Image (cartoon, rainbow, N blue to C red; front, side):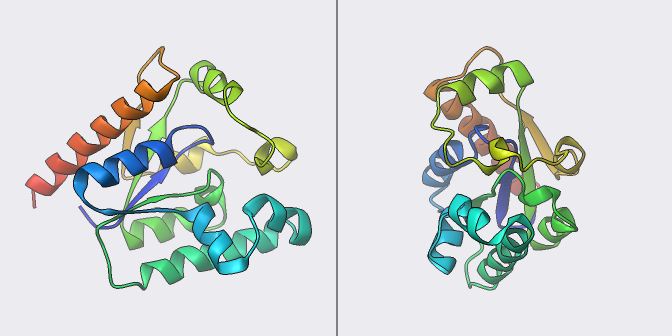
Length: 173
């Protein structure tokens, strides 16, 4: 297993919440790439997209991922933005940089989760969409979210699944 680990998936899949729980359990660092983008460019991803457009945002987002990869730390869990893996060769980039894990939800359960969140800062819901499943399915590993759960317990179970996956992969090294 190559480090760091990149969590990918649709918005609301639990990349950030489960990723933080996972990093805490492993004693690793956690980075939400949307937050890192804001640190680099001074604007939230939604504000940047509104100001400069999606194409410029995607180029800058890739720059952030590549710059963070240059830092001298490898025990990191990264939560990517939902659209990051779908732009140009970004999945190839993730394969080169580390290990990607797709948190896959059944659409009806993901829709329930999204209904419980603040969607005002979600660019994909503001007309910026692209087919994502073909990109996500290129992940090194896929874990399925627990069926029927849409709350915090789901994030805890996802983190637990991720933890066991990573431990089993590290045990093979």
